[in-house]
Image 1 (tube, rainbow, N blue to C red):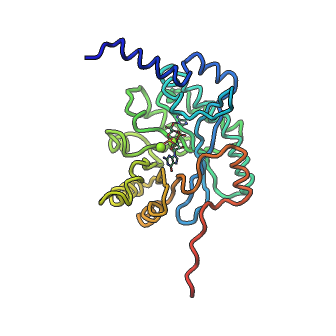
Image 2 (spheres, rainbow, N blue to C red):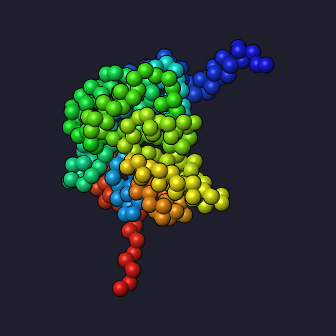
Image 3 (cartoon, helix red, strand yellow):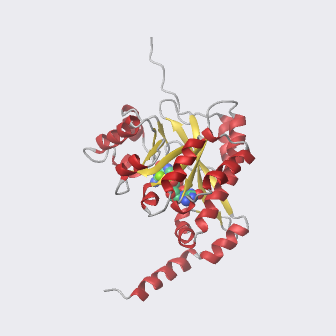
Length: 284
Ligand code: C2E
Ligand code: MG
Ligand code: MG
């Protein structure tokens, strides 16, 4: 049996490796080091970018390296700072997406942000509506991504908060779908406008006998519920073809684009907003 003291030691070692604890994370947020990067979401039939997902990064004050969430999200969740991160991410990302919408002159373009369960407090619908109004982002251009795991966390009134956000007009999406233990009961209990199929299922395509069938079944489930379905983690053309064949409408992944800085996102959209070549028309 391990001594409980061992657990503390392991945590301290991990924190010293990343150099982050609650106090230094709070100081980093105070110093404005939180920065969003944006991964395009494309319509699989055409490659058109229809949305971006804002992903949190923490700029390293010494070398400017953008630290991924794996290095700070656990500390953020344990300390409660994740609520501040989630709201800051919306505050920082909304004006960027408003600018993208101007560049695209009327084409549909939405912003996805990730929310942890701790952010689902009673005041969240008002906070979100206020941040969007200040940036000029309409409710129907906002996607709120919640992981199944975060919905499994015992919490009071999550359903009511999600219902209020859904009624306000934004898109409530279940992230990493299929990885939680009670996915299907969540679909019945919460208003779900969208499903993001976890990249572990996309990765099965073309590698095991029934990977494509499992991915296709998840796509079918989402569509039967009338949800917007997005496949995460598309890295190969084989995966893209299988997902298209399964009727999956949307996807994101390194095949199209890695997460982009704000400047790179604007550059990309100025060059054009299709990330894969359109299929060649068949000769008549
Ligand atoms: P997520 O919301 O499922 O985001 C997708 C993750 O998959 C991102 O990792 C993205 O960079 C990565 N990814 C995208 N395409 C591919 C691909 O083709 N292959 C592979 N291998 N990976 C791909 P990232 O940015 O490290 O974020 C990890 C997780 O951290 C996110 O998973 C999300 O759960 C959480 N997170 C990120 N930003 C926030 C935030 O602002 N608030 C909260 N609460 N959580 C966040
Ligand atoms: Mg997400
Ligand atoms: Mg995900």
